[in-house]
Image (cartoon, rainbow, N blue to C red; front, side, top):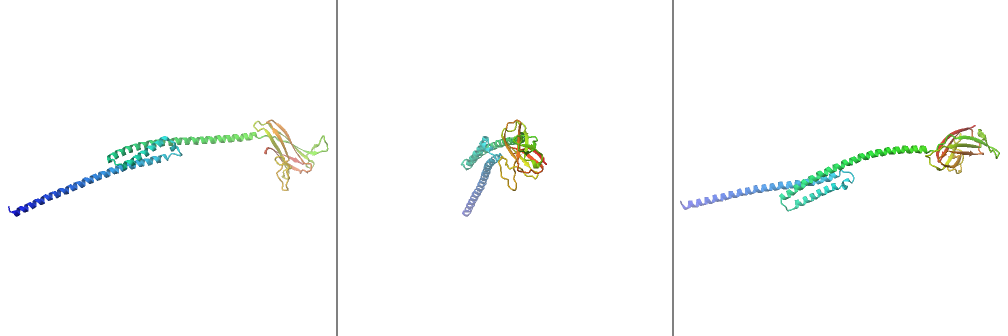
Amino acid sequence: MTAQEQKKNKKNGLIIVLSILLIGSFGFNIYSFLDNKAEAKKAEEEYIELSNDHEEVNKLLEDAEELTKKLEGDIAEKDSEIQSRLAEIKKIKAENDALIRSGLSKDEINRKLKANLAMVRKLNSQLESKVDELLLANKDLEIKNNELTVDLDSVNTINHKLSRKVAIASVLQVPQPTIASYKKRNSQNRPWKRTSLARRTDKIEFQFTIMPNEIAEHGEKNVTLKIISPEGKTMGNLNSDGETIEIHKNGALTYAAHKEFTYTGESQNLTLDYVNTGLDFPEGSYNSEILIDGEIVSISNFILK
């Protein structure tokens, strides 16, 4: 073999060796790329899994807090069991936040996150049961409260009716009075003479009986007499307290007689007189009212001819 051929063969061998090395390097690079890609994909999947577990814990915490808002008023704040469950969930959430930022391995973080997630699910389930229990108890209390309100309204209605009956029963009763008209006489022994004539009348006398009443309040009382003339005007010049008042031209509500008496609950006979010797009483029909402490207890009428 000539030197030229030997040189050519050596060159070809070198090319083959370089080709083999190049192919091997290329294959190694492809293998490394695929291996790194697989590792990256695995790491991404692990991170997504960690992130999902972390987010689920956060979501469960939000659900737990929203759950307690279903309770009206401050029931949730005062219930120690609910507050204890919420505190535990918040504590686990804080621990998860710290785990994500820690330098622990993915496997270690994943293990702890999954354990925490299982615990939060359990706590959330217990919290939901407790809230449902309180809502049901609150509903029962609401129903009972409504029933008590209805019962109280019934009791108030009955009391109101009884109060009205007592008020009606406590009003003093005065049967129809005896009414007589008199003319003034110039006699000390017999100063008054019965008459039925309007032009001769100087005094109108009312005799009446206040009936016994055990319910009525005892003590000092005022009785007044109102007389309404045929023209529709009230006669006399007294107010409801028995004081003399000045009568205006347009007229006023006045009373003909007034008396104070002490009521003891027993039957009492009283007399009220309207005396006016300077008045010509008009003929016709008169109406009258007897009032005790401002309440009308008797209505009657009489005629002067």
